[in-house]
Length: 207
Ligand SMILES: [Zn+2]
Ligand SMILES: [Zn+2]
Ligand SMILES: [Zn+2]
Image 1 (tube, protein in one colour):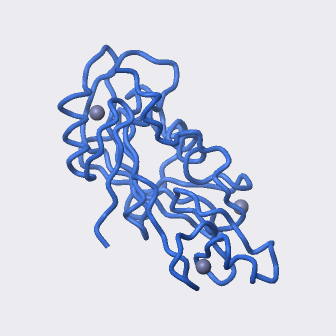
Image 2 (image 1 turned 60 degrees about the vertical axis):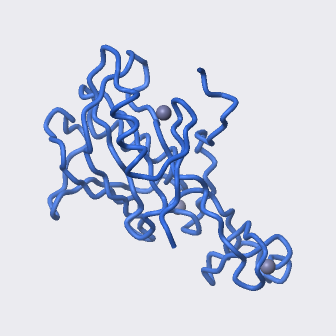
């Protein structure tokens, strides 16, 4: 499967993962605040990806908060950042990293979600209150039902199968069902994506 395309949240363009990174560096780097442009990808599903800017003055704590909200949070599990097996404290300042650095982010040490973070470039943005700003995100991948060929809408988390709204009626225990959300954590623990407020909406783009 080809990797999913994504949307630029700043101008609405739809591009591939690498093209959109180049697009952001070229078209959306202006303002007073120096930031990292960071790429996040699901380690086991690279079709799940984000690009976000984060103030260089911030610490890993701000990145943790953002990743929990958009992709991870279900029941307040532990999380950690590491590089080559060495863990970083969340107070670690982002000024200590460099372009090309890659970190592993892990959320929940039971049914773990692993996310690869890469500091891809430096950009500027207008000053804002939030430390992190989402700039691009993959389009929700189209998934077909494992029982028939209709578009899937839910996951049977126990069987780890995708199901459409019709085939879910055959599932005996409804507690197994989780929504098919746009996150590498879908289908894990009780993850429903309820804190994810970043659905792409072209009508909300300020031109
Ligand atoms: Zn754009
Ligand atoms: Zn959980
Ligand atoms: Zn079906």
